[in-house]
Amino acid sequence: MEVRVNNISYAYSGNVVFDAAAFTLHPQKIYGLIGENGAGKTTLISILAGIQQSPTGEMINVSNPGLLLQGVDLYQNLSVMENLQYFALEKGLAFNEVEQVLAFTKFPSSHHPKKYKHLSQGYKKRLAIALSFLTKGNLVLLDEPFSTVDIPTIRVLKKALREFVAQTGKTVLISSHQLKEVRDLLDEVLLIKERKVVAVEAAPHPSVHQIVLYFDCKDHTAITQLLEMDSRFWILLKIDQTYEISLGQNCSASDFISKVEEVGLAWSKIEKQPPLEFLFYSTDNDDQ
Image 1 (cartoon, rainbow, N blue to C red):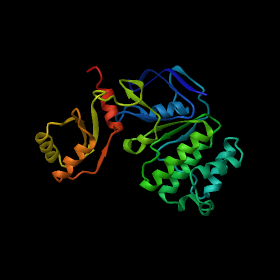
Image 2 (image 1 turned 60 degrees about the horizontal axis):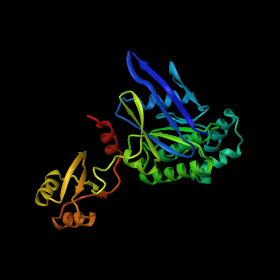
Image 3 (image 1 turned 180 degrees about the vertical axis):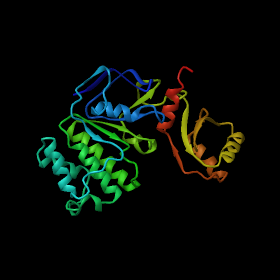
Image 4 (image 1 turned 30 degrees about the horizontal axis):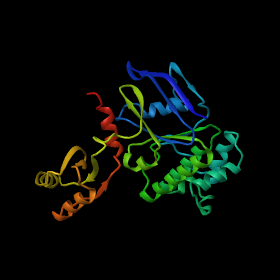
């Protein structure tokens, strides 16, 4: 069942956050929510969760969503199992659903009796995500689900989200500043831009005949000198230490890599898919 949001608006202290924002979320998909700091990502999640109210518009098929907010602790002296069973009772869910969400998040049975206060940060985050899966609704809202956890835990949680969506048919909306970590998880992206919510899929390549690479390198001087020496490659855009590199006609990715290795340039990553930072920049600068 698709979720539809029509013309919601929100303002505080005279500052407009959203003005007639509208979008649709489809079943069995994972959406990313991106935007600049202060754009209203957490506010939008709070409105969808019913914590804050929009004075205008409507939300269709949004009822009792699962929710993970930043900085929310569970009951310190209850065990993993007791915390989940308590909230299952609160939500009118059967205890067998507790077993299901523990299975999704790969929570080892040895940890089920552990009190919340004795869990590592990674297992606390697993438990919080397992709790968000305990919902009668068709939508799960996650605000910064991968913050404060290590890379192996992120991998477990990403797999859990994919399996949860595939098996339940529910929709997940993720707000995250760790754009590179969530990029491969997302089916679609919602961008908060100019007080609207814009659905985007991918940053377009400059030309259908042009190969573009995304190249991570800390040595700006060295990469600039390399490109000055070889006119087959040029920089389209730089964000932080990632360069959007365009390759000339009849030039392949292996040609670029060979040149980089030939000059001994230190680099950490080369990709063909644009990081979400570039998607955001491309969409934010359309028609300017």
